[in-house]
Length: 148
Length: 148
Image (cartoon, rainbow over all chains, first blue to last red; front, side):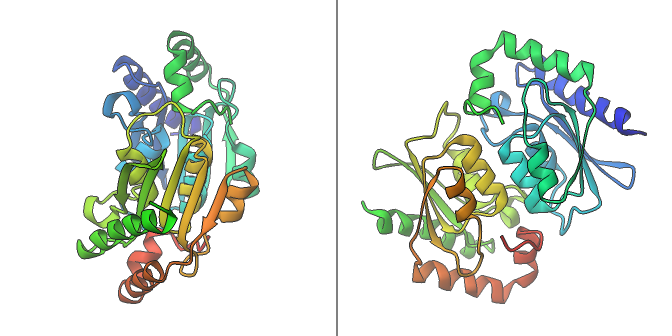
């Protein structure tokens, strides 16, 4: 499967979260071409403020000594929490669905030696934009008002 | 209660985690002089790699729109995951128990406008040093080999 294919799996996680009334941000962890874990934002579903899509995915992957051969696919550009986590855990590569609805921290990741690709996925852009229009307060809460 | 008093509450969380066989790193969130939440590292206890002490504490505080009046006490200097989270959520002030066993990211936090105090607490230094000597592999796993 190529980057677009894995990103669609992350989008399916985002769609699942949207259908549950949560923030539509999903993530998939891949190693050696195999999906290790998938997750999505759980702020609404679990009342957990640190459960962004990337964090939920990393949590579901369980304990690992290293992450250098891992690629993390995320539908939305990572916030500073998720970017810091990617740096601390030494995740080798990040593929971002889109950075139109949230600028995120691709440059910070690159400055720390992490490879980042931004796909500009139309389905990711559209679902996130729809949620922000429908639930502006939930979106503001999820990023604590910080767009980047 | 002063900073040393709140830090001792964070240390008690670290001691609790140590007694459970987990990484002895604890955190307490305080707002307007009142404890909002307390937590500790849960990597071993819950098999959760993102449950550093600070993250567990923030999770237990539940959903909040803003964190600017919050002080986060943590027994050990924050790793990049926890530092990124502090920045994203806009936590106003961070009090660090010690930075001898792990350099952490006080300068990064300050560069993002967050007030940081380092107490150099002897009880925090001693408990962490004891754990690292007893369980070097668990410690390496918790920071994915990155000392800062």
